[in-house]
Amino acid sequence: MSNGRERLLDDVRALLGRVIAAAAGLDLADRAFAAWLLGPGRCPFDLPTLISASVGQRGRGYREVAALGYAAEVTSPACQFRPELCEALGWLSKRPTTMCGEVAGFVSDPVALLGIALGASRCGQPTIEADVAAWVARVFAARAAIPDLEPWESCLLAAAAHRSHRPGLAATPTGADTADCRIVLRARAVLPPTHPADANADEAALVALLLEDHAGSLGFARAVTRAAAYDVLKSEVVASGKVGVVNEGSTGMTTEPHTEQAKKVFVSYSWEEGDPGHQQEVLRFTNQVRQYGFDATMDLFHPNPPEGFPLWMLNQIRRADFVLMVITETYRRRCEDDEEPGKGKGVKWEGGIVTRSLYQAEFRNGKFIPVVFGPKHISSIPTILSGNTYYDVRKPERFEDLVRFMSGQLAYVPAPIGRVPHLPPRSDGSGS
Image (tube, rainbow, N blue to C red):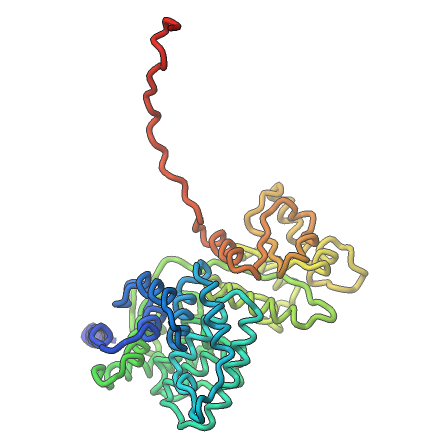
């Protein structure tokens, strides 16, 4: 792409920024939606002020709940207002979809529904998350009674369904006119990754949208979405884990690459007989780790590695910056070779690799991290990991601690060391 065309795209992005900043009549949900999609440094609204206003809101309506949800997504895992969020979501999950014979406003409000779904996924209370997911399903059922939305709004609905773990409720539009929505919603991990060919097609379609559509004619939410999509295309983390890299074959755009690569995380776990939900919880946990900037993987993402599973597992552990070991009693038995012969060969193999790695490192360990889904599994932590910090990741504050550890961000920073004071004697030495 020529420098002139790239400057033209930058000019369009600047115009979108002016449209967003000049928008009038915005409520907390609108501003929080922009803060979430645009991110720090690009949003014209002050995030701490938004959070304070959202938490302190009295007489809360559904759009105020949505604002709390967007704020929780932006600040997670260090969200400090989960009690208020849980109270608001609990109230909303009991609201009917019709009032006085009319369909409730939230049924036709995709910006609000996405914010609510985001908030439920960050509330830290599985019961409330399940209640909200059931409420979202009722809302989608009620949508049959109202006209269809614009295609870009349907992208937001698909994202809300995906974050509510009910992707079958809404299909993601595939037209070129919604490429901006798909790009930014994938980057924010509320739509699943797609095939590279489709991603490249979306990049090319976005460039066409930027050059052909008149930015001033877009509404606030669509202007935010398009501006954020361009920011993703030009400089932010994409699904491949590379930063600031755009496929030149599809769009010709060139940007300065970011030098930081996402840290690699391998999630090791055992298949639990009689508990199929365990594997799904591991899957959700792995995807949650990915949402915070880590290149996390597990066996479900690689169902048939060409090198075979034993070599694949060895390479994953070798290459990982961190190995998160999801502890259960079954995992402990297999890791410590207490399992009956022929069962759990995968964890036995991984446990052997971990044990030998720790032996070679003289048991200095910052890589192999035990995590548990609830306190009942703490007693099953293998002996080789005894003395290491474990993380009960069902507790939001402990999940935050795990993210802090892997990203090197301390929760408490020591004060600078000051000068040693000069302290004169309390007496003159005469003893009086």
